[in-house]
Image (cartoon, rainbow, N blue to C red):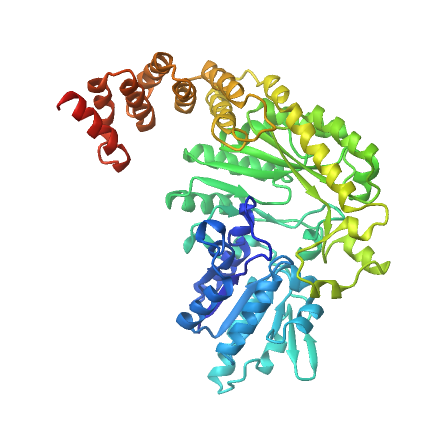
Length: 576
């Protein structure tokens, strides 16, 4: 038996939101669980295949090609509101090509609006509610048993015994009840046995009551279940051995269990794993000791959902956290060399120019080094959407439209697009106006064990101004000067190849070749075999007419075809 698992493409093309292009971790878990039981379960990532860098290919056409090749018995789609249109189009294509294939939807959208999807998608056979590993494993086993007993129907009767499903029968929809949650997540199969990936999670669930988030309802309660630190460490160690060096830990609140995070960090440090990772947390679940351990274990960024500076707005969003806690959390993250990223939401119920002013004042005090500003949108599974339905502001029929979500302002008579857009513009401008000051006032803790990490942090930050997202943004004033200052500050904490290279490249760009050579000599004294430092030195020496010396820096890396042009020029100039 073969099960094809599909991550459909979103309705709107993603240009900057790379997270929307990767396979959800849930599909990896599901596939691993099936494969460990002897079931073929490949994953098709239509979101990634239809990305701009891949030619923006037609995802339905790509899906059809895979169907022709794979000929699956069961197709499972991981569906969100933004990807539901593509999922339904692919389901229709599958029904046309393979009339007897069993088609199932799982994920947030089917869990929260199954009735609508059954009406909108005639090809859909069943929905898997919430957590899917056990339900889908039992579903697959039930289909195999039925076929072994010569029951060749697409939806055998024994599926009614599998909890966690909604099945389309000729007589109507059959809800088999809720499947019990996996109490011990460590009993699940390690997806790293079969796949390489960067996005992963240590826990499931969230005790928060954010009115704009569907996570607690999706996982079945506000209770958080966790992998053990050992299980999570082994997953990362296996992925690191396969060549993955950076990870995105997507727990709703990674640091909620302080002791578990400390144990995980201790294992990373003791194993000497050279990795980096980003995490998501809340400002009221961090402290200095925890941040120190996380930084030494490779954490380079923490995202915090600040949402607003207004007490009124935060209360309506279900996140009434005191502003002073947010300010202290951002100070601590910066102090320990972890880049703090702030999430802000605008266009919320009750939003006014005055509440945006409060958010701007808080933003200035937070001094974040990265920000994400979201216009508030609502979708099924969230408290805000449920209340809107109860008040008659919207019905599930709205999803018959080709839309990804519903901006709140469309449901609020006190808001409109132009007003909300102006709110977002003001917030973004306030961030970019304050960014140079946020950088210049960085204060790192004076702990010698952290000096190498401070140098790494500062040089990474500098790179965003010299070559990264801030380098070409016109809202950032004099990014090269900011970068140079950060590179120099990094070197004050220790030898860092990125800092030496960054400083030299700034001088090289300004044609200050002697200055660049001086910096590169200092860097090469510490890192003599560093290819990029040698390459930069070679280019600088070529510009100074010292081709023979330049050749000495290129030749050790002559297997790199990118250097052949420089090597040939140097040999021509020196008759070598």
